[in-house]
Image (cartoon, rainbow, N blue to C red):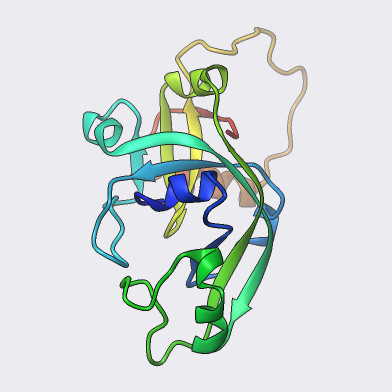
Length: 188
């Protein structure tokens, strides 16, 4: 989230996050990290591209991991009036550049169920190397980079495994052309 919206959300000043798309149902009532980016032009992402490494100084200088949120529901605004009636909840004023535009059919409102700032202990999880992978315009998956040799326990198998072509292709495509090292997924 761009400045100043992330802090406003975490301080409960902003209780609805507005987007042009619905929150995926799998992310309802799930603790999601709030990563603040520097302020940019309205409706223009401050992050160009789809994959970002925490070891890249350009990334670390433009992003700040602040806290977490759980969205409890997704509401649909289908008129300018209903959207503007909730301005105190979503903080999107008509003159902000994010306001209701002519031709808009629906704006989604992700309703905050719970939120908070991370404490020092929780922020330590982010001291490890991680990669942000854009899944939707403002939703990223945080993947912890697996260090060579990490998690090696020996053994390995005992028996043949049936290969699943669908999963094999999915894995191949997810790392294809991205030059990503093998990674261990970790939800923050």
